Image 1 (tube, rainbow, N blue to C red):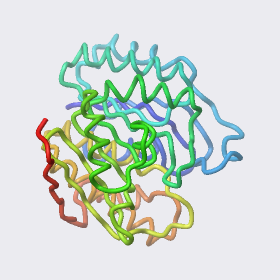
Image 2: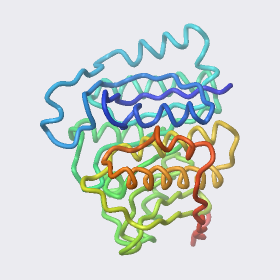
Image 3: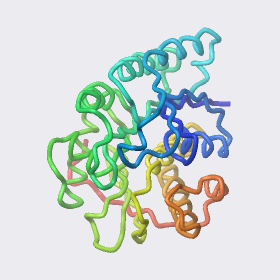
Image 4: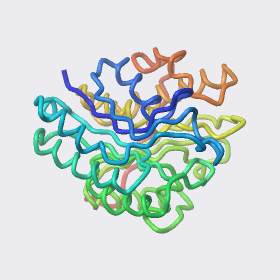
Length: 290
């Protein structure tokens, strides 16, 4: 069995970070090595929600070394990271990715560069943001971002599909194999799109816009997890992208039906194994060949 390491926050109530990522992967048959970067009572949507939380300052490196001491890193097919709270976590994560790839050359690093909410609210400090962009994005095999994070990484705001693809191609030039951009609403006024850009082609999946009372948080963590679990299970990247989008859409539909602002990953757990919907994957041919 191939394992996945998930280095993300944990909430007591709700589904974000490891609370959004771990269960879907387990439901897909993956053994998850869970490492929490911080613990917080509920999904943080404003400054008041951060009044009491516990952050892991310097334990990521030692915990990964502990896993390595029992020779389990060699059995890990991927490492996923999400929201990071401080510079030391970025530094430890960088070294942890290097250690994993030393033990398993084919292991993937999936970087969910969580820096902005879908409403463009910045959720990390500028120092951590710059460290994620300059240290983690360049070593990632898979980068998962929203349109605001794409703008910050590439230094310009995309205005159309061509701009988005061009910006993703610049990230690919740093070394990534796949860039997945979620929450794209600039391609249409009544739909949202998720885009995957590779070195040869781009693919997108569209669905009708949802109107939640407040921005949902945790979808990027879920997308990163389902895509990583699909890849390490031997599914080809295009089918993995399709499965991920179908599962994500199914969870959003169930969340809407429950009239909830928290992702309904438990209620919709069957979506991770056999999604209800089969949304079309649209291929977009690149104008240049890499």
